[in-house]
Image (tube, rainbow, N blue to C red; front, side, top):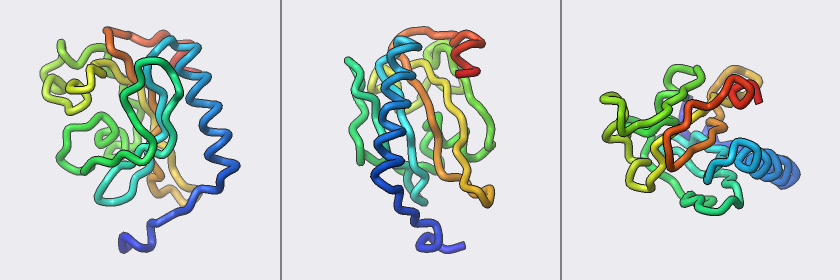
Length: 139
């Protein structure tokens, strides 16, 4: 698979729906950031960012994905949910780049295309310890 084969345009209607979803997630869970991240090898791009107070992520912002230490890297690599209640208290996450943005807590899930390839992630981030209840995980 080449990088060009992976380029996917997301229709405006879907972006609009996803915007509503991340805004609602951030409001219900009471976190500064709800995001949909798009895997655009070799980067990860903020495709949708909640309009919540204190959200440091800007739509269109991108970062190198592989060997970055980003939470999303682990979600995409493993294809599984990741919950980090407090990166500052976890040796595996204490150097995570999101800490520079004061985002120390993370709950994220993989988003896959119908053929199983990774599309990206949907996640919420918090600037304080957050163990995310089972209800929030199910949400």
